[in-house]
Length: 176
Image (cartoon, rainbow, N blue to C red; front, top):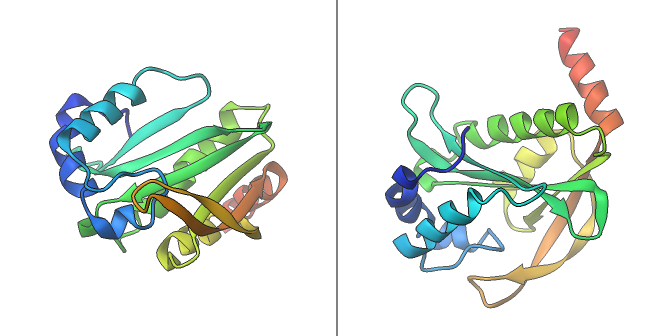
């Protein structure tokens, strides 16, 4: 993972311009153009306070696969929200889980003020739900969020991971 680069714009625009992705991601427009990608890269590198946006890349060659981010919760200074998406050619290879785990570890290791991480997924997004569950998040409830591509609202499930649970999961992993 690394910050998105100008060199990612073509791959970002190509992968993100996919109705199957836009239908599952609340803040992604569709169609997704090179202009959208350039604006995303520019905004991602502005360094908004508390917001961390990363390009998910292959370790061996730096190939762009998708994006992930941690953003401050709107009404709660102790909570960050985890988000991610991958280009369709890279689905079902463990990349999203690996990226989620890296961001979770980074958040809890570097931000002592963070108590909770939240994640939301569309109720029909089985793959995203599985990543969230494999990362230790617990179901909290359902709700509706604005859906940019759909120009309306979409139903989501809300999950939460607290610092104590994360610490337990990390220590259990060391015991293997």
